[in-house]
Amino acid sequence: MLHTLRAVSITAAASAALALSVSFAAAQDLETFTFMFPVESVNQFHPFYIADELGFFAEEGLEVSFQDAGGSSAAIQQVIAGNADAALPAPSAFLNAVAQGFDLKWVYSYQYANIFTLAATAESGISTIQDLKGRSVGVSDLSGGEVPLVRAVLEEAGLTSEEVSLIPVGDGSALTVQALESGQVDAYSSSLFDIAAIQSRGIDMVTILPQEAQDFPANGVVVSAELLASDPDKIEGFLRAVAKGVVYAAANDERAFAMAKEIRPEEFEDEAIAAPNWEVARRLKTPPAALAEEPFGTHYLEGFQAYHDFLRQGTEEEGALPTDVDLSVALDSSLIEAANEFDRAAVEAAQ
Image 1 (tube, rainbow, N blue to C red):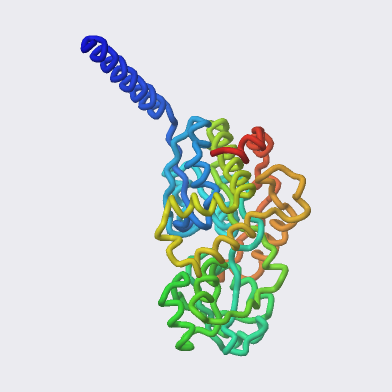
Image 2: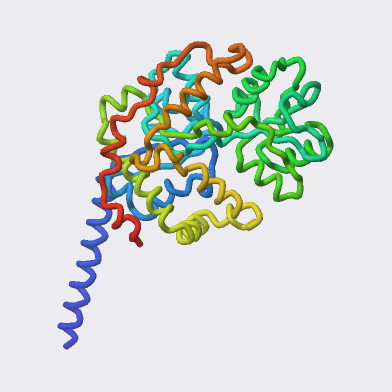
């Protein structure tokens, strides 16, 4: 009897060791993939994290490392330098990089509404862009993705950089709140998430960004043309996993929220901020009606062209595009159809 139990124990141990060995070997077989976010936020980019949590990247043979680049321009620089396989920058940073001669491709559209906005405090009495003359506008950083948008909006309104000051005041932090409450700045431009954070602290903000600009596209997946040409399967697998994450989150909103909270609890501690941020994230990744029947990740060409033309206004020193960008080349749709080749019902029911 003891001999039998010992044999069973040895067999069980051997089986466990074999399982661990197989698991380790499988992990070793995964190809590493470095992905750069412009900012660190599970809330804002939850489909990516959920795709990782549910094993969608592993199914594509990838072990993904998510990193915070500290801004869209910095994220793109990491791709250009070969330190990252892909990034998720704002379109302004992407278009400026391409206009400067860097061979990059926008291969998947993730957010379809403008993530950046421009709002004034209700107390300021500012209701239009023209009202900003002689005033100060706060921005997250002078190299932030919202700056080209602000400069273009001011240019279109006939205002110069001498007439409106741009002051870096942080990304919706206590520094931003202090700048608005003290009157150091009369308006603020940054992401919708930063505006939501400010409003959660009791500051009433009024959006003054023109509706056309509110409809501009936001962040998407960018890779180097070289990597896309040399290893399209790697990019395709990554995009398919992302599309699965988007599908799952859209079909399981409450569960997705709970999962995101489990992944990074500290980001969800303040419900007054987490809940509205989640709504903003959901709204941003919802395709416009014109793309309702198109595959996930399809580019909204009309919105992109309008944004491109908008950014061509003003001077290069003010953040305007230095030259035209051929969107038919820069926006690459070659992998979008393949990225959507999966069982949607099975993904929606994933556990």
